Amino acid sequence: MRLKLVAVAVAALAPVVAMLGYNEYAMRQQRGDEVRAEAAQAARQASSEVERIVEGLRSLLIAVTSMPSVRHLDIPVCNEALKSLAANVPNIKTIFILSPDGRPICGSVAIPASTSFADRPYFRKAIETRGFVVGEHTKSRVSDSAVLPLAMPALEDGKVSVVVVSGIRLDWLQNRIVERGVAPGNTVTLADGDGTIVARVPSPDRFVGTVIPDEFQPLVHADAPGIIEVKSQDGTDRILGYRPIALPVSPLYVSAGLSTSDAFAPINRTTWTNTIAIAVGALISLALSIFIGDRFLLAPISRIAEVMERWRAGDTDIRTKLTGDGELHAVGATLDSLLDELERRRFESERAEEERSLLVHELAHRVKNGFALVQAMAQRTFMRSDPERYKSFSERLASLSRTYDLILSGEGVASPLDETVAVAMRAHSSGDDRVKLTGPEVMLTPDLTLPLSLVIHELATNAIKYGSLSSEHGTVAIEWRFESNRVFLSWKEGGGPPVSAPSRKGFGSVLIERAFPGVAQARSRTAFEPDGILFELEFALPAHSA
Image 1 (spheres, rainbow, N blue to C red):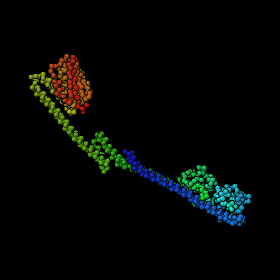
Image 2 (image 1 turned 90 degrees about the vertical axis):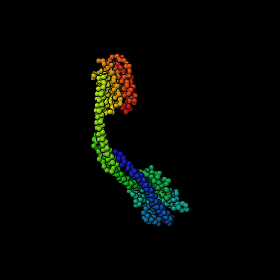
Image 3 (image 1 turned 90 degrees about the horizontal axis):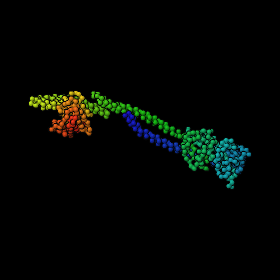
Image 4 (image 1 turned 45 degrees about the vertical axis):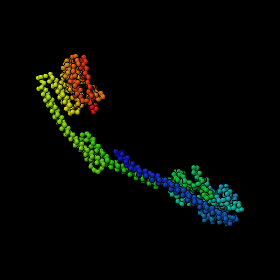
């Protein structure tokens, strides 16, 4: 029962747990969509910032190509102009003019005349494309620091006359990203066309100048921006929004990663809080269900079961004494009323049984008195005129009296067959082993006990007068068996004088025909064999006596 109560409590909590589980799933799905949108937005904002910076420098280089000192190659004036310009633009370190063969012409700083930039990929690309070029991560030959080179050719009559070269300071670019602000656990990464990282937050010392791992290289030149879930190089699981290089608008690869653990930290805290609350609530519910079950269910049920067991064991005074408005208390009160009623009926039954017993004994006394009166009347009537018949009648009457004693001692319900036969033979047997009884236990109803007793009495009387019991060595074997609700009884005499069939029907045959009830379907057969009489009798028992 206690387990069933716990099951009920669990079943009651199941919908709540299911609802919280669904809410948890929905919240995580929603938060996942939000984080993906945030990652895409962060990447888009960083890319826009880079585009704005590059576009500003592109405009600056275009303006430099239009300067008279640059177009006319007025070197002293060009040097002063570029020096002044570089000093007022903090995101570049130097700016200089190169000839189409890569030799320096003028610049914001002095450059050795022997220095050549013809081997630089960004320079060659500017010559080839005759357009603005953003190069790859490079160590400047002028300032000896890492820069992101920029080149803009100036055209005269459709030919490249000079190339204006500058470079974005990577330390300035790194600071610019830091100033924008990046939440703890998140990342922003900028990389050039070769996949070399030019700026990163956090840990720039560890990653700037390194190449993006091969599994992420396809993102640098992907066809469109996207969002993926990755494990970053620092081992953190992140949702990464990325924007590939799309020249000339987006010359750098930009990615923004949001830490999954940090993004889901509030939900995880809520989950743990809800889990603990559910666990505590479940424990409280289970404890209350056990307490309430024990108090209001198990205790009354146990009391009712205990009362029933003790009442069945004989303690008829036991009662539940349950009172109250509860259903089980009502059952207990009803059980008490039932036990009271049963006790009352038992007393009435015992009193009726005592009265019936008195009536039975009174009836037995009166029947015996009747037999004694009949015997006295017969003695006065036949004793002197016909003593032999009186003796026979008196013995039959005595056998009938003994049979009534047997029936009344069993209170008129049933009598054992073996005892019925033994009582009928008691007056004719001297106690030796000349009479043998063999057969199973069979209970006879009163309407069968009387005729069978009288038949045995008649057989015994004839055996004493004319049969085996008239001889000193004669025997009688009485056997019976019970089959298919019928009794088969045989009387077999032996060791007596020769017998012969009588000339008229005997009293035993009349008894069988008239004394046995019709429902018994009694049948008999008598054989006068050389060793003695063989008498066989069969009759049916009522179905309920089997």
